[in-house]
Amino acid sequence: MEPKIQLSVNNDSGELFSLAYPQIEHFIESRENYIKALEKTVELLEQDNRRQSSVQREIKKSIDELLSFQKMANIISAAHNPDSIIKTLSELTLQVIPVLACNIFVIRDQNKLESLTKEEKTSYLNKIASEQMEEGIIDWVLEEKKTIIIPDLENTLSNGEEKNYVIVPIVLLNKSLGFYLIHTDKHQKKITEHDLQLLSILTNQAAIAIENYNIDLQLIKTNEELKISHAKMIQAAKLAAVGELSGGNPAGRG
Image 1 (cartoon, one colour):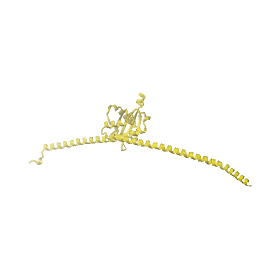
Image 2 (tube, rainbow, N blue to C red):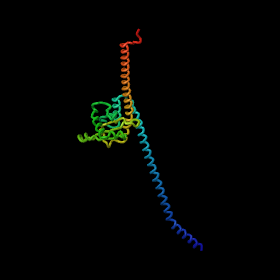
Image 3 (cartoon, rainbow, N blue to C red):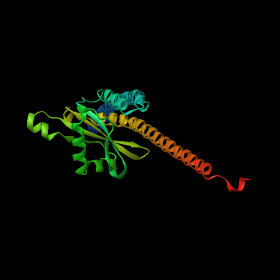
Image 4 (cartoon, rainbow, N blue to C red):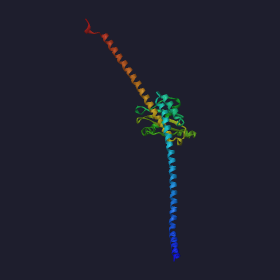
């Protein structure tokens, strides 16, 4: 009887194993898929970490570059006359984009446009500035306080070489003082947002120099007016003294 009992047990075990095997196989397969999913997740996390590290390095590099450029741009704010302002501004602009010519245009009373320097080689920019003023482009730049790139269509059509005008607003304490006009042969598509950001840094420093120059001009003007007023007062006092001497003093006679 024992063998029969043993056979019955063996059969039951075989049946149980047959029933459990698919579940065991599924469990093993699920476990392998789970491990693969974990490995893929770890790989993606590592890639993301490397990408973030790269982005952080680029951001740090960009910030360091901006800070370094800011220090150099501070030289402009120390300039005391139009020629030195333009000269320093032009030299630093060359580190950003090529410069064929450039000039600063200040908006005076009654919306009058005035170029900061009178150099002959940049005189053609006066015409361009006036045209953009008439077309309302300058008003938009000053109101929006945004840099704009205008294609040099005349040169492009005649010579087939792409050139552009870059108009950068000059703003100090949210007040628009004028604009910086640059003529460049750098293609518009190659002028990056980073380039425009650097040009804005330069013009912000130029704004300080221009305001200091305007203050100097006002002080000189006020000083001259005081001199003229003082001279007139002295002249009036002299005339009054001469009048008294020539007319005499009746009450003091005798």
